[in-house]
Image (tube, rainbow, N blue to C red; front, side, top):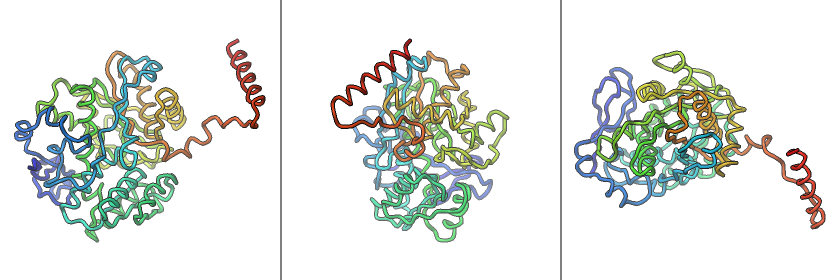
Length: 418
């Protein structure tokens, strides 16, 4: 049974058929999925969810497909890590990391949204599946297209990190590098989708794609024992994830699965691409486009498609925004790895650095529960850290050389302590 009813404009509430549509023809507002909420409340329970397979489709009543899922059977259900060592370093009492850096199969939160978009694409008869990407989305689209046997096109900026290009190309799609930034790539893909009728995950299939992001929030609630945290810090790129986490929280509460106040949701961006944080600081209704210039390429989107909804969500939940320097991003990648053994990409370093700033500002009290969103894996962007880590010690093969090395290390520590 499907609980999905169709699409509706998030601005003027005009209703639309559940096709490959993404913008209202009356007010140009973005379209979003609507569901039979009464039926969900009647039929769904915690026990039903807990009895299902550990993947994102355990919440399928809240997802926009008519039939059976087509992919994503091992995606989602990623760890919610109680980060005690990091919490101690930051002076926090209760800190969690929602770690999508180990999501299957492409090691980022994009496997959630692509699983839903690809499943709906099959239902709509799409023959060519593609995306405009800053890296992680391309990796996921290529992987899921390969699994489904769909022809695939991944459009990227030419200056993307090599690891992310390889992560897409290895699956055999057509990878197209564009001389421009992400916003230039996105503009071209919009034209291609209109001309050829292809299905672009984050453009004409965006209304379905975005709904997959809700599962990130669903899993946080379930992982906390069916409770909300007090605070959540989320990176912002195109703006898909942050507002859908709130929507997922709200839908779970409306379905009677969880009680209490929604968390305060905070936005994290890099100084070199911070249109949302700037709009929050200047009290603007919409972010003003910027030209990205940051090492955090996966969130370097200067004109976020869902920027308005990010601003609305942060403000309605009582959250805040913080932007951070590339140097802070590097230090927080190292901090997370040193304290919790998690190697995140620069987007995760951005989120942790913004979290630290919000704690220092008193926006996040140290005695309130906090979830930090880690959305991508550092092994994809390892070249970013090459100049910022300690080089391996070089020794010969004898025990005496190693003992001399240990003695010199001990002497160094003693001198440092003195």
